[in-house]
Length: 148
Image (cartoon, rainbow, N blue to C red; front, side):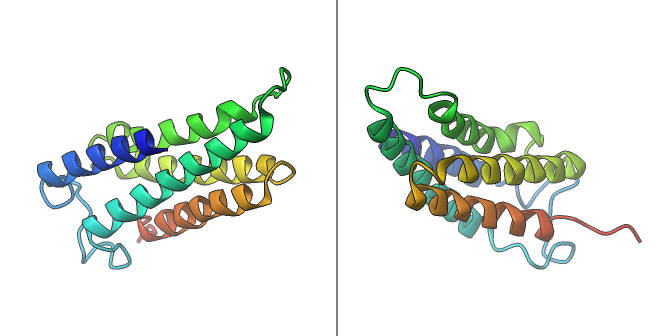
């Protein structure tokens, strides 16, 4: 869990240092996307979400210890984490709006799927990943511009 939080904090720190959210073409602005919180809030939220993913992953490993046929569940959380961690890269530093919306929807679908798969094993884990679902739904709504 600490490694995941450290990695997320490092990525968020790099994004903050490079100031990707306020410069360059295609950057999301307050006028265009008034629902988006400041970049530091988004980074803090993602750091918490990654910590939750790390905690849930630890619970899943603990519960499935000694079960050789655990299926795909142990790999779903790292896949979700990797998807979230790579989001700034595959949106070209948040400049590709269509790719960003697709990324939000992918994260929303993947986190909802993971939460559903977790429910039978750990209801708490399912609810904690549900927070990722909620944030992804909000981000999808807050960063989408309806066609004029």
